[in-house]
Length: 146
Image 1 (cartoon, helix red, strand yellow):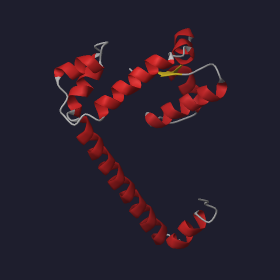
Image 2 (cartoon, rainbow, N blue to C red):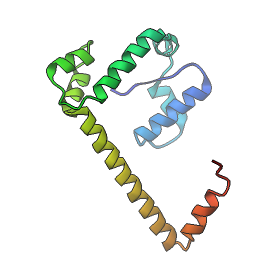
Image 3 (cartoon, rainbow, N blue to C red):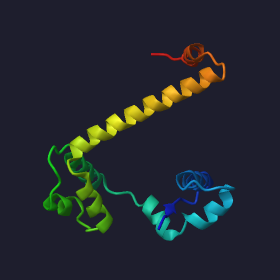
Image 4 (cartoon, rainbow, N blue to C red):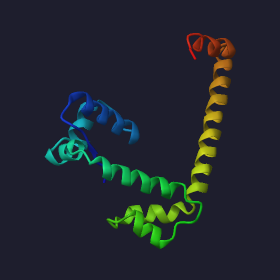
Protein backbone atom coordinates (compact mmCIF):
# COMPACT_ATOMS: atom_id res chain seq x y z
CA UNK A 1 0.00 0.00 0.00
CA UNK A 2 1.81 3.11 -1.25
CA UNK A 3 0.56 6.60 -0.40
CA UNK A 4 1.99 10.03 -1.07
CA UNK A 5 0.54 13.05 0.66
CA UNK A 6 0.71 16.51 -0.83
CA UNK A 7 -0.53 19.97 -0.03
CA UNK A 8 -3.03 21.67 -2.30
CA UNK A 9 -0.23 23.70 -3.91
CA UNK A 10 0.30 22.71 -7.55
CA UNK A 11 4.08 22.55 -7.53
CA UNK A 12 3.98 20.28 -4.47
CA UNK A 13 1.50 17.97 -6.18
CA UNK A 14 3.65 17.77 -9.34
CA UNK A 15 6.74 17.08 -7.25
CA UNK A 16 4.89 14.33 -5.36
CA UNK A 17 3.75 12.78 -8.65
CA UNK A 18 7.28 12.95 -10.11
CA UNK A 19 8.74 11.37 -6.97
CA UNK A 20 6.13 8.60 -7.15
CA UNK A 21 6.82 8.03 -10.84
CA UNK A 22 10.55 7.67 -10.22
CA UNK A 23 10.22 5.66 -7.03
CA UNK A 24 7.84 3.14 -8.54
CA UNK A 25 9.49 3.23 -12.01
CA UNK A 26 6.18 4.15 -13.65
CA UNK A 27 5.76 5.09 -17.30
CA UNK A 28 3.70 7.89 -18.81
CA UNK A 29 2.50 11.36 -17.92
CA UNK A 30 2.39 12.75 -14.40
CA UNK A 31 -1.33 13.64 -14.48
CA UNK A 32 -2.69 10.07 -14.11
CA UNK A 33 -0.12 9.37 -11.39
CA UNK A 34 -1.14 12.55 -9.59
CA UNK A 35 -4.81 11.68 -9.76
CA UNK A 36 -4.46 8.06 -8.64
CA UNK A 37 -1.55 7.98 -6.17
CA UNK A 38 -1.19 11.45 -4.60
CA UNK A 39 -3.56 12.25 -1.72
CA UNK A 40 -4.69 15.82 -1.33
CA UNK A 41 -7.62 15.35 1.04
CA UNK A 42 -8.23 17.01 4.42
CA UNK A 43 -6.38 14.24 6.27
CA UNK A 44 -3.31 14.69 4.08
CA UNK A 45 -3.50 18.46 4.58
CA UNK A 46 -3.66 18.03 8.36
CA UNK A 47 -0.52 15.85 8.26
CA UNK A 48 1.33 18.56 6.40
CA UNK A 49 -0.04 21.65 8.11
CA UNK A 50 -0.24 20.70 11.78
CA UNK A 51 3.10 21.82 13.17
CA UNK A 52 4.50 19.64 15.91
CA UNK A 53 5.53 21.73 18.90
CA UNK A 54 9.28 22.35 19.04
CA UNK A 55 9.70 20.54 22.37
CA UNK A 56 8.18 17.34 20.95
CA UNK A 57 10.31 17.61 17.78
CA UNK A 58 13.44 18.00 19.89
CA UNK A 59 12.50 14.97 22.02
CA UNK A 60 11.98 12.86 18.90
CA UNK A 61 15.28 14.05 17.38
CA UNK A 62 17.09 13.22 20.61
CA UNK A 63 15.49 9.75 20.70
CA UNK A 64 16.48 9.06 17.08
CA UNK A 65 20.01 10.32 17.69
CA UNK A 66 20.46 8.12 20.76
CA UNK A 67 19.17 5.12 18.80
CA UNK A 68 21.43 5.70 15.81
CA UNK A 69 24.54 6.25 17.93
CA UNK A 70 23.92 3.12 20.00
CA UNK A 71 26.83 0.71 19.54
CA UNK A 72 24.86 -2.30 20.76
CA UNK A 73 22.37 -4.65 19.15
CA UNK A 74 18.77 -3.52 19.43
CA UNK A 75 16.87 -5.59 21.99
CA UNK A 76 13.12 -5.90 22.55
CA UNK A 77 13.13 -3.11 25.17
CA UNK A 78 14.64 -0.77 22.56
CA UNK A 79 12.01 -1.79 20.02
CA UNK A 80 9.23 -0.96 22.49
CA UNK A 81 10.87 2.32 23.52
CA UNK A 82 11.45 3.60 19.99
CA UNK A 83 8.13 2.38 18.64
CA UNK A 84 5.58 3.42 21.27
CA UNK A 85 2.78 3.08 18.71
CA UNK A 86 3.70 -0.57 18.22
CA UNK A 87 3.58 -0.41 14.42
CA UNK A 88 4.61 -3.90 13.22
CA UNK A 89 6.69 -2.69 10.26
CA UNK A 90 8.69 -0.32 12.47
CA UNK A 91 9.28 -3.07 15.02
CA UNK A 92 10.45 -5.49 12.32
CA UNK A 93 12.76 -2.88 10.79
CA UNK A 94 14.27 -2.13 14.21
CA UNK A 95 14.94 -5.82 14.82
CA UNK A 96 16.59 -6.23 11.40
CA UNK A 97 18.95 -3.28 11.95
CA UNK A 98 20.88 -5.10 14.65
CA UNK A 99 23.59 -2.68 15.78
CA UNK A 100 22.56 0.79 14.53
CA UNK A 101 26.03 2.35 14.63
CA UNK A 102 27.65 -0.55 12.77
CA UNK A 103 24.77 -0.57 10.28
CA UNK A 104 25.24 3.16 9.58
CA UNK A 105 28.97 2.66 9.02
CA UNK A 106 28.27 -0.26 6.68
CA UNK A 107 25.66 1.81 4.80
CA UNK A 108 28.14 4.68 4.41
CA UNK A 109 30.78 2.30 3.08
CA UNK A 110 28.31 0.79 0.60
CA UNK A 111 27.19 4.23 -0.61
CA UNK A 112 30.82 5.31 -1.08
CA UNK A 113 31.63 2.12 -3.01
CA UNK A 114 28.51 2.53 -5.15
CA UNK A 115 29.31 6.18 -5.88
CA UNK A 116 32.88 5.29 -6.83
CA UNK A 117 31.61 2.51 -9.09
CA UNK A 118 29.16 4.83 -10.84
CA UNK A 119 31.92 7.40 -11.30
CA UNK A 120 34.26 4.79 -12.81
CA UNK A 121 31.52 3.56 -15.16
CA UNK A 122 30.60 7.11 -16.21
CA UNK A 123 34.24 7.96 -16.87
CA UNK A 124 34.74 4.76 -18.90
CA UNK A 125 31.61 5.47 -20.91
CA UNK A 126 32.73 9.05 -21.52
CA UNK A 127 36.16 7.86 -22.67
CA UNK A 128 34.52 5.26 -24.96
CA UNK A 129 32.45 8.04 -26.48
CA UNK A 130 35.55 10.19 -27.05
CA UNK A 131 35.05 12.76 -24.27
CA UNK A 132 38.05 14.14 -22.43
CA UNK A 133 37.02 13.27 -18.89
CA UNK A 134 39.69 15.34 -17.14
CA UNK A 135 38.94 18.46 -19.20
CA UNK A 136 35.20 18.07 -18.63
CA UNK A 137 35.67 17.69 -14.88
CA UNK A 138 37.98 20.71 -14.71
CA UNK A 139 35.54 22.81 -16.74
CA UNK A 140 32.64 21.84 -14.45
CA UNK A 141 34.54 23.20 -11.45
CA UNK A 142 35.92 26.43 -12.97
CA UNK A 143 33.26 28.54 -11.31
CA UNK A 144 33.50 26.85 -7.89
CA UNK A 145 34.29 29.25 -5.12
CA UNK A 146 35.55 28.51 -1.63
